Length: 324
Image (cartoon, rainbow, N blue to C red; front, side):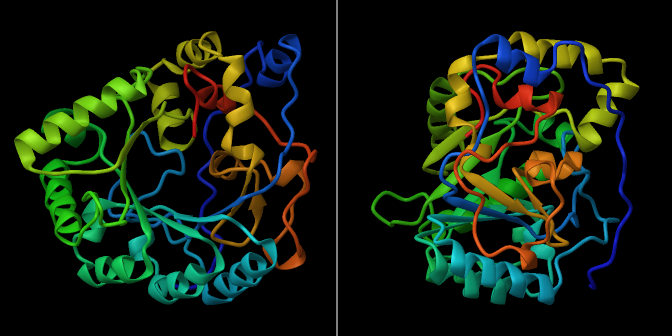
């Protein structure tokens, strides 16, 4: 696929009266960058699923994928940035042409290389599992629920069983096994407008039930709120839940979560090479620090103290325990 401008897929957007910036100010807080340690690379919006909660509206009909030229520019930027972590995401990164070579080139450039896997797309790519093992890639996989009904309702019929099968393949390769050094983390998003439960308790439940019922092991579980962007925002608006959900997120604001927000230490590169403070600002179209820049035009990561663009979707990252 070539790097062409795909449809923008605009979503309804209206700032609630109690803005995120205003909430920060009333709490005596300021959101600015600390040291940038993570380079996140969104390689495209192509996916084999069209999940209702997807903040980038990924799906089979999306044509936006990262070209080889942009991959080269990202690699050059990564060589100059001395990042501790490189985080590859999508869409379904497994479906992007040239992803294997891209991972090969990125792996030596940071101590940790993360890959946000789509378990159904990965099922057709056993070669990628072998590559992950060789490169010691950290695999982070979305696994929303322990039962088929809610998982398939959020994603598509059959996704739950297909995901279990891929997790077993990863376990067989050593991922999630004690002493293997191959890290397998799961991400669970709640259904609809619910906020996520306590992460530590939910992680314990997932460990217990996946091992007992399915014989599957993993390392960490992250429970994250659904971000009101993309397809999820469109669903909230069409179902009449948008204002209520935004108010729920704002009412759950936790000032203690601000210091740990990922946007303070992360720079995000979109499929077309444009830079953002995080993947959610990428989905919202808010460029890095409010200024449009291409990865090929910068030689270093944004400095500490630089401003961070915000919107009402940022309340999802400060609700309860916050985003990591």
